[in-house]
Amino acid sequence: MDAKAAILVADRTIEIRNVHVPDSPPRGGAILSVEGCGMCGSDIKQYEGITARSGMMTFPCIPGHEALGRIAMLDAEAKARWGLKEGDRVAVHGIAPCGVCTGCMAGVACQDNFYYGFRSLDVGSGLWGGFAEAMEIDPRTRLYKVSDSLSVEDALLFNPLAAGYDWVIDQGRLKVGETVLILGSGQRGLASVIAAVEAGASQIIVTGLCRDRFKLDIAMELGATATLVVEDSDVPDAVKTLTGGRGTDLVIETTPGAFGPVRDAIMAVRVGGTIILGGLKEGESMNDLPFDQLLMKRIRLVGVLSSSHWATQQAIRVIESGRFPVERLHTHTLPLAKLEHAVHLLAGEVPDEAALHISIVEQ
Image (cartoon, rainbow, N blue to C red):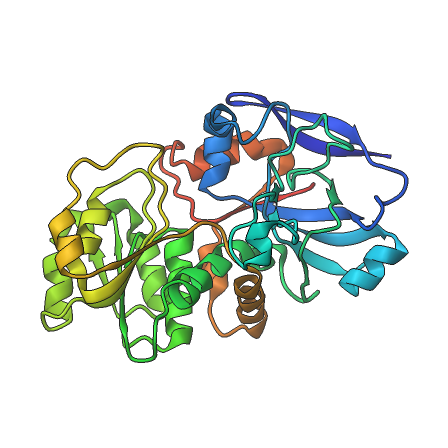
């Protein structure tokens, strides 16, 4: 049996091909029948060739690291370990830690992570990415049962929403009654709004560009208490006004490729507050960091990447609860054959069309 797959063969070049699906599951693993796969900014960087140039992947490969699907095949060992059966609907964590390295044993970063969506097509079955009709599941992978009642689009929000829980609650340590500034109103900025509401924040302030006004409207629907259009506001001054001159307890910085928000974060956070840095800057260095402010305010500065097991569980829980209008985060559903168009759309390269979250479905 073959499965249709989108294969990244070179910078900015995707080919739709058929890839053979193994006749039986790998020992301790599974074969997933993919329902859909979400997209984020790292898919854009991978498409542009930045990921390959960094050494994280080699061509060709099947991208996609936010997959949802049904178990098509699994052996007895996998069935016992995961507590799953064929036909179960699951979300796939995009990073599989080894569990035995010194990093894993210490409860910090794994030194031998396996990243879905970045392993070469030439390794094993090659079915290591979610932009395909089928996917091989490594035995060390964390899988999460998902309700059959959820739409594919809502279920695929598990990945960005998980980042919000990690960044705001786990790493950000936000407490009930505290205040938070969220710089950026993309997927992870809006996910952070939901996490802040669940954490009991008293003020949730969200920033965005003029072109992102619809995202700021969504932020208010999700529970933000104020929004700021950055072209029209001095963000630190506006935040001080909103917080009575104190600044916010926590700042979540989600903006990619921009250093202005980092400066705003340092100026807007209170003395002794925390800044979470989640927006990658494409390898560039910041030349005008307000270092004295960073020291004198005794700011706790934390870099974050991806999301944890706990946060993924919370994301699925809140999606299934129906408490928030998470469907508002989703803007496009496109078939596998239009993956390249989806990348351009998410990158903001399609005139007169704005995207927030895109689901790629396998049909």
